[in-house]
Image (cartoon, rainbow, N blue to C red; front, side, top):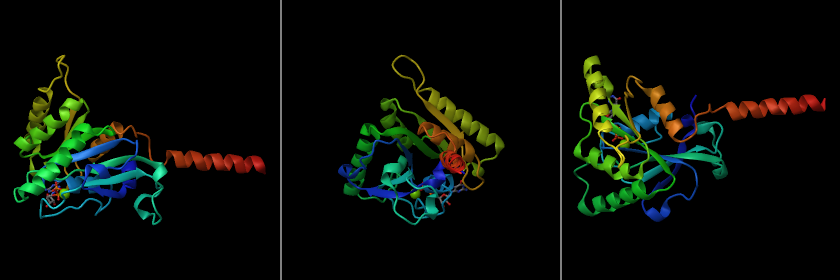
Length: 242
Ligand SMILES: Nc1nc2c(ncn2[C@@H]2O[C@H](COP(=O)(O)OP(=O)(O)O)[C@@H](O)[C@H]2O)c(=O)[nH]1
Ligand SMILES: [Mg+2]
């Protein structure tokens, strides 16, 4: 069981002023619409309908926040989230590249997205989800280059890897690594970019993605450790009282 399984819907943001005011790390999920972002989030969080997955792309235009922590049994708990216990947020960004979004709406969320990605202090890292068959489209590169100047890590998931055979997968991964390693800072040092293959359908790369996301959020311990040590502690106190 991963800490990510505790994720629960927290809020939807449509204006910069509505961004949650918590000093906990956030990790943003970005990608073209239809890249498999919602499906990936749902699988990583082990919940069927946390993020909205759809055959009709381009419908999620807002930024959705999912909290981690703040509840001990995740999606099964019915009472309200204890906000003081929130340890991190998973942030589902609007999918880009959907042609039928109108001009004004497009500008509105490009603005919202741009500001959030470039200026959000709590934002620790980005997970960039790209179809393994056609990664680094112009819009993916734009997103990557928007975020790169922050110096924060980007972890790329080459999604729907089940659509590629073994040699195609290897080649896709190799090419993506080459593209990513071409980005360097002003001293010539590589940027903190990483990449892996991912298939929600075949659960390829699930564990690697889960570990990486928890690492990037600084939450790499197992979810039930604090509970176990608390209950052990209670037993010790109970024994001492007897
Ligand atoms: N073959 C395959 N299809 C996938 C995978 N992940 C998502 N899809 C499909 O791709 C489409 C778009 O997925 P969705 O998660 O809604 O994409 P989003 O727009 O990026 O959130 C849906 O029809 C999914 O069933 C995968 O790992 N393998
Ligand atoms: Mg989606």
